[in-house]
Image (tube, rainbow, N blue to C red; front, side):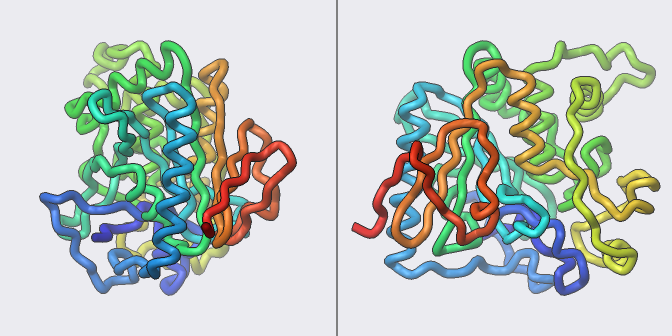
Length: 326
């Protein structure tokens, strides 16, 4: 069952397609609704049997890459809607955790629950996370491995239910400003979880009044140089339309950003770059698939321009290629 999109093109029809991020699924105890407003909670594109089989094979390749790493936690992101014209490939992030009992991987993430109209924290199996991408014929997944104390700290806080919920906002916004506690989107929750894992905690308790956990996390992120790349809103008309689209807001954004027609909202690329700077030895694995094969690329080299589209999946000489059409 499909829940909502973390960042959907909520204003493509209402004028703001610039902001989109991937799909998430509902929990067994929370039946997602398919609201007919602006396409936010619509059902995802159905995959045929052959496409489903290929995507499951791709999910197996992702799991193999995680297993081979020897790690038990990783940052993970996948593609969603086509944001190639903005240079954005990955749109939805979560924290991948390996079960010590079964060895299976799941992804802890924020999603918007259509039935209760609020954000939730959801644990989703790795195949479901991979299959949640909008495209059925091609897709992309990126994994960042965090060795040593940094990975252990993230795993510890990510597995703690109370900690995860303490950083969950009451209100959701697809384009949430990265340094406001008014709203939150899925990627912002991941960024704040990194802060909770890596910051000397409790420093905000001496403030008057004491800072909330989210405010403490954002203060540390800013101090450490976390700076999401601006996304262009496009035009004054599109910025104005944001006032009338559900789950897109402008009241949390600085006036200078609104006047400059830009959003500073967290995306997977921002989280990856921050983790790379914070954690010496962090490793990145990029995986993509089309209708014939999966490609596994290791390293921090930038995604090639032809890959910044849902259909792009090119292999370099050093990459590993896995056939999916057998």
